[in-house]
Every structure is written in structure tokens, then in C-alpha cells.
Image 1 (spheres, rainbow, N blue to C red):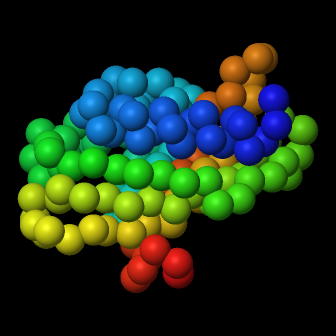
Image 2: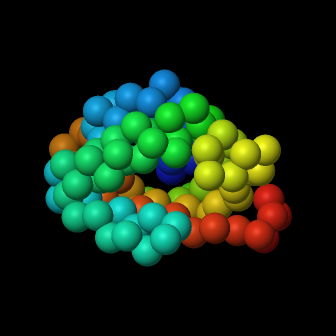
Length: 131
């Protein structure tokens, strides 16, 4: 599978899980030993931690939010390893009514056996959709 297809499938999965507020499905996109750093610098270690932190957010300020993701670029950096940059737009954060939060996320995607999942993610706020 081409790196753009792998990155696209995983980013679509993240957005679909987010928009259905299904953090179990969200977590299944990550390897058990994955790490995630969110936009405020919280470092989540392991799939369970990633699911837990995102579940808390979806019970609170993100419970009615929607997320759109677009893969800007992706490339193999080693056999079985892809790095992707994914542009995001988040609407419906209860703490910022009427505002869209733009983000840029770096994903490290690893193949184990025949499966591709996220092993590391770092999300950061972006000041506009094009920065």
C-alpha cells in the first residue's frame, strides 16, 4: 500500500472516530506502545492513556465537536515506517464557541506484520489553515 493511502486511511479513521465520539475506535488506530503529544503538551504514553485522555475530552469540551483532517504529505523514512503531516480543523469546542481550531499533526506510522498503525503523534495549534 502506498504511503499516501496508509496515511489517508489512518487520518480518515481518526476523524471518523472523533466525529462519532468513539474513543475505542480512535485508540485502535494506535499501537499499544504508541505516544501522543497534544496541542497543550500533554504526553500520553500507550494506547490506554491515549484513549483515556481523549475520552475525558469527549465527555467534556469536545462532546459535540467535529474534526476534519487532510494529509498534506507522507513519505517512507525506512522500510515499514511512514511520517505524515496532517492538517486539521476542529469545530465545536465548547470552550471556544463559533471558532475553528487549526492544527498540524505529525504522525509516525509503523507497519507490524501486515498492519499499519500510529506509533507516535504530535499535534500542534496552527494560526491559520495554511501555516
